[in-house]
Image (cartoon, rainbow, N blue to C red; front, side):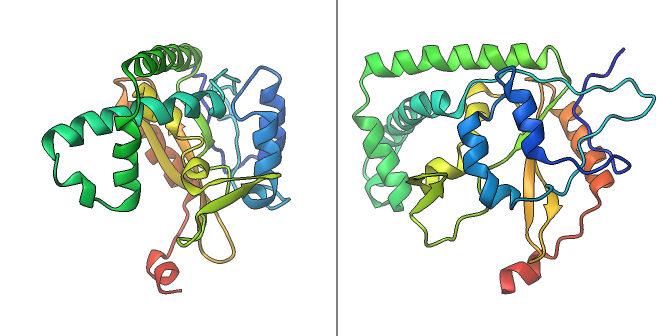
Length: 239
C-alpha cells in the first residue's frame, strides 16, 4: 500500500526545518507559530538543520502534515494529572520516604496532593481528547517526526530557559514537545539527527501508533543507518 511516512533521505537536499514547520502550520501542525519563533535561535541556529526530510524515490512514500494538540494545551493538564497520580502512588506506598526525595520529585508529589478530584477528572478528559487526536493523526501516516525539544540542551545548573521573549522553567522547556506522548501512550523513539560542531547532537523524535512499538523501532533503525552519525559521548562528557 502507499507508505505515507516521514522519512529521512541522504540523497535529498537539506531542508530548513523552519520552513517545514511553517508550511505544516497552515494545517495546525504542532509546533505553533510561537514555538517556531522561540526555537529559531537556539535550535536552528539560523541555518539548515542537519537532516534531510525526504521521500524515498519510487517507493510511494509521501510527506503529510498531521494535526496535533498544541504544547500549551498539553502542559495545562499534564501538570495536573501527572502530579496527582504521582502523589497517590508515593503517598500510599512510600508515605514516609517521599519527603526525602530529590527536590523535583518531592515537589511533584507535594503539588499532586493539592490537586482536587474534580480537576483530575477534567485533566483526564483532556488527555483522552489528545490521545484521540494523535490516533487520528497516525491513521493518516505511518509515523510522525518532530523536534524533541524547542531548545538546545540547557545547562545543568540552569533553573530557567529563555523561549523567545519569555522565561520558562527548565522542566517546561525540556518536556514541551514530549509531554503529549507521555500522556497518550504512543511509542516514541528520540534519536540524534544533526551533529553540531562541538560534538553534541540535536535530536528528533519519531512517534508511532499505539501497540506498534516494533514497527517504530524498525523505522528508527532504518533512519539511524541513513544518518550514520558518529557521536563520541565519552569526549562530550569529558569536556
